Amino acid sequence: MKIVGADVIVCCPGRNFVTLKITTDEGVTGLGDATLNGRELSVASYLKDHVCPVLIGRDPQRIEDTWQYLYRGAYWRRGPVTMSAIGAVDMALWDIKGKLAGLPVYQLLGGASREGVMAYSHATGRDIPETLEAFAEHREKGFRAIRVQCGVPGMKSVYGVSKKKGAAYEPATKGWPEEQSWSTEKYLDYVPRLFEAVREKFGFDIHLLHDAHHRLSPIEAARLGKSVEDYRLFWLEDLTPAENQEAFRLIRRHTVTPIAVGEVLNTIWDCKNLIEEQLIDYIRMTVTHAGGITHLKRVFDFASLYQVRSGSHGPSDLSPVCLGAALHLDLAIPNFGVQEYMGYHEQTMEVFRCAWRYEDGFMHPGEKPGLGVEIDEALAAKYPYEPAFLPVARLEDGTMWNW
Ligand code: CS2
Ligand code: MG
Image (cartoon, rainbow, N blue to C red; front, side):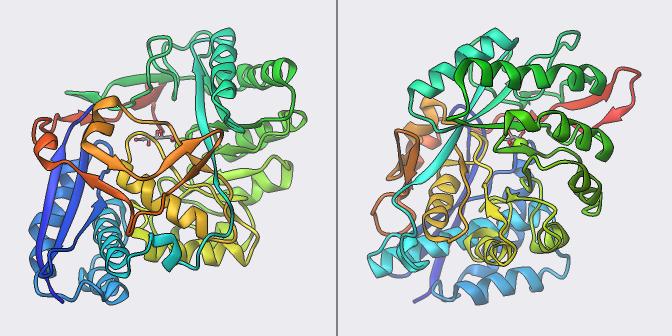
């Protein structure tokens, strides 16, 4: 069997997505997500100009060999662009493998290890009352795990909070990077009150998550983790930038609040110390940005040795193909933790037809052979790419900060 086609589909049904479609000489096709928010065209070019040409003629069944060929063969290693391109190829080849076997991919990964995949959604508000309202709505939808993010008095905008009440949160803005101002002091003084209000109103039955989005120093992260221990969070995410994995030793010394890291990481090397020193409790890497199912399963298997569980990134800026692939992994691995599920724009769900489903707090990839997601290419063509950038953040004195 040979690969005869590898096409990159860039479209914008509600937001930009990059999808790779691989076609075999027997007419079997596979899809992979290659979306990197704010840098979509970089991955599209990496695929079109450097990867797709060398896929033609290869045996699509040789998934591991293709992964090693693309990882070692590039010479230049790691990074979100390279690993997203490899991730898309890997997803598409697993999709083909499943279709050839007539099995959903999770069956090829060892079968189901649970009945369903617990999902968490996003409850956001411009203030605490609005966030509590959103929390109640998500509880009504059956979510057993809900992330809370809310505006902070004295700050014009805060990560994770949409500008209009009830509007879906989309960080990327068309045209030019939005400059946002950040005050750690205002944030640290305020956010514990958010968790206190949620626990006071809704109790402790629902898992409570929060994303600090790389904003704190290690000692500030330790202080936050310690100050919210009574609210028993499921996790605090991205407390501090994780390039320096040792920074988490300091945080770990001061708090028992569980820690999640990883959505901006893309190889096992980026999280090896975090896992083997048990500095984190959940690894957030995602199928697209972490080199596909083949590599992410390697990361999760390594993490299982240290009782670190998965918590894959699943925002609306990763395509339904990525979510489908994530759900196959989530269902099969022994150390599953939780799956992020923000939901998608209506136009997105018209272009991508999915076998995966959400029901009463849990998700399932479905039983269709392969990944179970298809793309309507004619409809996708009606939504051309629209340049969009993620915001940048500055401290109130103008110092560049981590968005
Ligand atoms: C966030 C993401 O979902 C999350 O945990 O960190 O929404 C992140 O901000 C976006 O994926 C960036 O494109
Ligand atoms: Mg995050």
